[in-house]
Image 1 (cartoon, helix red, strand yellow):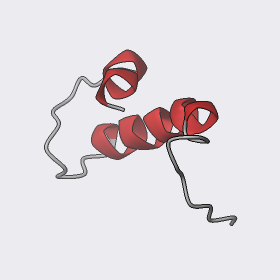
Image 2 (cartoon, helix red, strand yellow; image 1 turned 30 degrees about the vertical axis):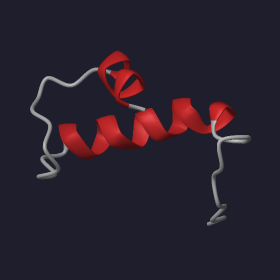
Image 3 (spheres, one colour; image 1 turned 135 degrees about the vertical axis):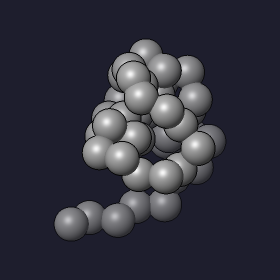
Image 4 (cartoon, helix red, strand yellow; image 1 turned 135 degrees about the horizontal axis):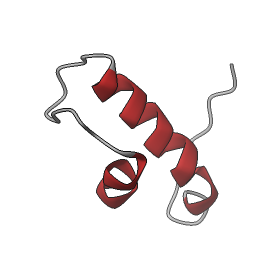
Length: 47
C-alpha cells in the first residue's frame, strides 16, 4: 500500500481511482451518505 498526500496540483490523475473506491464502498453498503445505485459517473461528479 502506498499512501500519498493529494494536493490541488496532483489530484486530477487520482480521480478515477478515488471514484472507484467511493463507488465500491457505496455498492458494498457503507453508510457514508450515498444510496445505491451509485455509478462511477456519480462518484466522479462528487470529486
